[in-house]
Length: 561
Image (cartoon, rainbow, N blue to C red; front, side, top):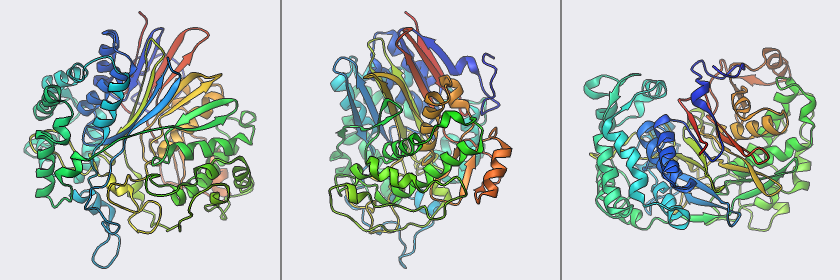
């Protein structure tokens, strides 16, 4: 099977999941998508072109994770100009949204399962506009050509893989009537190995090829979206789609052990939180610990707890409020935060700090939110491409929770997101719901640089666990000297502000026992955390090393000539 190391999944296919190339590389969580990107690269397209083709392919192969009814952060490194930009296609709240959208008549928070599968949870989708902005600036091929591989796959039919099989069994309750017609025809679940055609989605793709993305925001598809939502009590209007706008953002930048790191900026808190964790860890010599030592797990957990306490308190949409970004990444502030780590036990004093003391801006009250475990189980997908000219795309895109809101646009074959549930249900804080506002996300598309040259591109799905998956992969490479596949497959842990530590099979049981004696609680059993796709760039040897995570049916493909 290739390398002799233990993977995080018993379904690992090393040959499919890893690749080496001299010219270009693509990695995604589904073969249909990676194949679409490969075709565009072989036809002379660049990384931006290929990444767009991959996104459409993922809508075919991973409709429960992503699609044109969702959002994404499309990060582009442009080799010629040596610039890095994020084409921000995050969802926005419709004009009719308000701060008490997810409170009942008694001002009590509506249970997550109920509010996340209602039409009022659907945000205005942005991934199509973000990709089109990037294509117009950097792409070389027409949109119709980039959609074609996915359109053909939808018409031919796609095989249900084990990931889709499990998602249907675990999250069937999220599916609305039109989605059930596709995924549970005549009451029978699609199962692993079944091939099903996606005629309605193919029709949608053909419309986009003919009419452009305008059809989604003000044409035939837009009208179908609003009609579907209105039937289900939604609040979105055609004018919300027509007025949707992306932003082109500067990444958030940080350093770690002599490397520069670019990642997603607010309203995605993922990049800032990940950089905070890395800077907290930078104060310790991780290389002196074994990769499965309790000291490593302890440092990871406390750094996550500290950073996520700040993330929950101080993240928001910078178009609507001042965010203490400068303070959150201030070296002096982080040094004080690092003092909370004592190596003795779980520090019960960990809470949010005061980054406003190191930032300009208007301070806003912190409103504590109820902890909801189910809300943390969101899914997503990540993909990345490096082309022959050195351009890079790292994109994390989503419909939020599995199958989004479960609402499939009637006769058009794609599901709509439930991303408005990423807003705080209890109003008053930085992340309260407002019209036109973007909810806080944890998406963390990331590019790592050494001596101004990109050396690693990566990201992951997984809601808040995205941050944990990305920083642990970086640390595994930079501190523990692993290759990119080993770094992805090393079992991960995760903790945010909740009481339990999530963990993957393969962590040290001895170290787990030691941490339990120090006051930590672990989830009853292991479960997969994240799904990292990454490409490592070896400039000295002129090689690209791509790897997909074994926790899904990922594929990396390299091109040599």
